[in-house]
Amino acid sequence: MNVYRRLFGLGLMFLMLMPVSGLSADTPQEPVRAALAQTGANVVFMRHALAPGYGDPDNFQIEDCNTQRNLDEAGRRQAEAIGRYFREHQITFTAILSSRWCRCTQTAELLNYGSWSEFDGLNSFFQGHVDRQETLALLKDKLDSLSSDDMVLMVTHQVVISAITDISPPSGGLVVYNTSTQNAKPVRVPHP
Image (cartoon, rainbow, N blue to C red; front, side, top):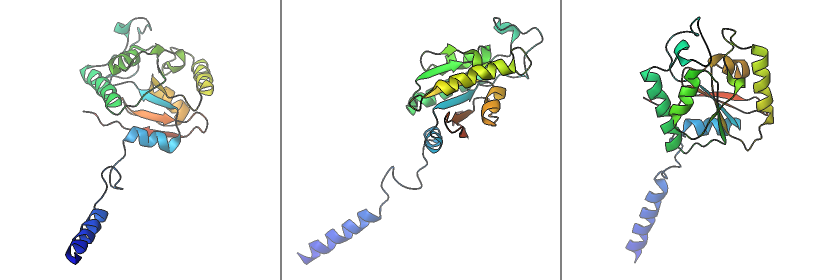
């Protein structure tokens, strides 16, 4: 009987020393959820996926994707991978909004993450195709209208994201943003 108690005690001690799966301090937390928790964010800004070049061609027309920088094959794969990542990690949004620029609408479409809509407050004012003040006023009104219960994905441009957050994400990069505190944090989603 004494032997059994000793074995039971050793077994119990061994179990207590084993790390608990999923609760170990060394287990990394999913980066988007971690950033959302750290900031209390209710907006995820996403810079459009890879679109080679700089700015837009001189003959730019908002209604004609042939006159704009568009996603290349790597950009299309990047957008699809980010959408897959969101699905696999069950990161959900109450709304998805996109700039009217084709590289943003292509990104929103290729995320394949449900319905989305265009929103002029996310358009690029980089080359003066739209007015910076008007665009940011629309965006700020939208941000002010959101509650802490919202979780909105906004697919847009580096200039728009940095105007609001002072952060310049890479193509396909995310910035989580709390509309109440203006807390912002960049997030890199692991993708090929």
